[in-house]
Length: 115
Image (cartoon, rainbow, N blue to C red; front, side):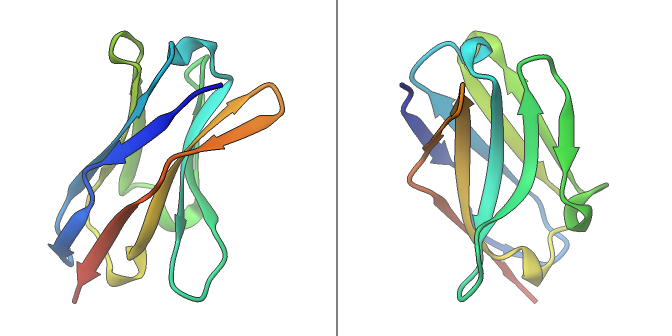
């Protein structure tokens, strides 16, 4: 099991940047993959970015070149650096951790990008 706590959301103008953090309650090296998902009002939750414990990353096409996912094993924390933000990036961002076949979720953090 793992508890995940997100932070770093907020209100930003289009073109701005935010960095989200996800602090885990256990050694993240033992977590197969950690990722960020987002959910906009009236839409389904979608994958934004994922990083495996081997360091491999994958991004949604809509954020490639603008967002970067990274991990600090010593701090048990995963980050999402978001640059060149667009209004369509607005939503609740959730941290996800997968251990074997079980998914764990944080409570979410709101990101609002104004035009």
